[in-house]
Image (tube, rainbow, N blue to C red; front, side, top):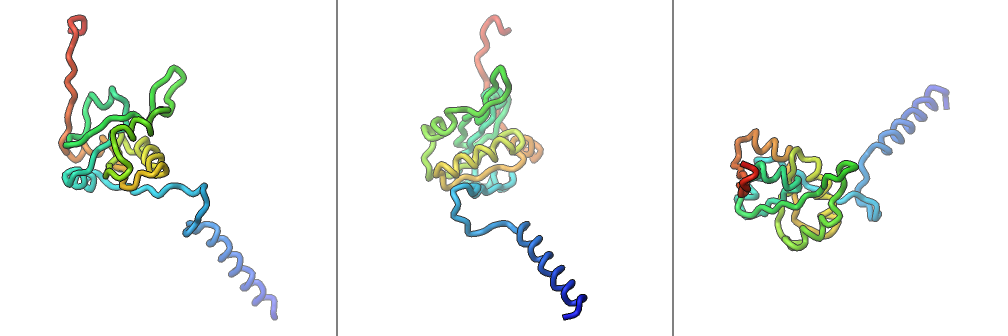
Length: 161
């Protein structure tokens, strides 16, 4: 073989190797694999909620009370909590969701922008919840589309007036 042919063969093999290490892995059975999360936009979320899905809002209670997705079935279970040292995962998140929903319930999970809900959806899917979808863009995108919102009215005490 001439040196040009050897160089071309080497470059082709090198290119195939580089491409193969950057391709997504499929068919893996490793326990370390990421759970399969389905992310949908707010328009798709609204259609699913209209068809009977439950909305799981994973923002803080304070955020939720300032305004949330208006749908027939809405639950608020914070994924993160504020602590003196900053944000931390809600240690009872899965237990609280499981007390409200079955693993076969159809859920749309949302937060403010789509980050917390992605993490929460991963936890739910890896824990056996089968019909869970993450709402991309969160409450911000929902409001931007002018979809229906609800504000919780709390009773004011005299000293708050």
